[in-house]
Structures are given as structure tokens and as C-alpha cells.
Length: 126
Image (cartoon, rainbow, N blue to C red; front, side, top):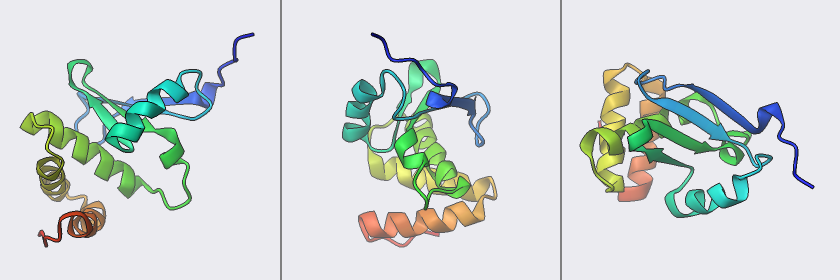
């Protein structure tokens, strides 16, 4: 018997920071979530498919009570950092993403991101 997919298994929308990029949130109820979850386990709460111009986000993270639009912006900015800098280096993507949020005047998200960057790398960024 195959599992029926719920309409809420995925959510797709244009990236708020670059509308030429699509974002898809894959929720744990999705038929393929368990196989995709392995990618989340290896890469974090999201990953980029540059050839498809697509950011894939773990719906389990999005459902957490602490998750806000600012966290979504941080994920988008980080993945765009990988795309624009053409790097797999997490620190480079983080710093680029932080600067992109500042440039796009997403200052609340940038403030949260600056704290995350400090926690990860012990560097102060502004």
C-alpha cells in the first residue's frame, strides 16, 4: 500500500532574497522525506541544488516553535551564499549571507545571523 501524500507535505515559493531562486520546504509527512532527511543530516537544515536554482528546506525545522521568518531568511541567505560565491565552505556562505541580509535591509534577520556566526566561528561581524 502506498502512502497518500497530504497537500501540506511540501510548500514551494520564490526566494524572498532572489526571486529567480525557488524554495521548497519538505515536511516529514512527505513520501520521500526519509531519503531526503539523509541529506539534511549531512548538510544541515537546508541544501542548495544550484543546477535547479532550488533551495530545499527541512520541514521539521520549519515546524519548530522557535522558527520565524527571520530564520527562513537566514537559511535563504546562507544557501545563496553558496550559490553566489560558488563554494562549499560554510563560513564563506555564512559571511556572504549575513552581508546579503544587511544589503537587503533585513536587519532583524542579520542580527540573529550575527549571533549564530559568533557562536559558530567566534568572530564578531557587522
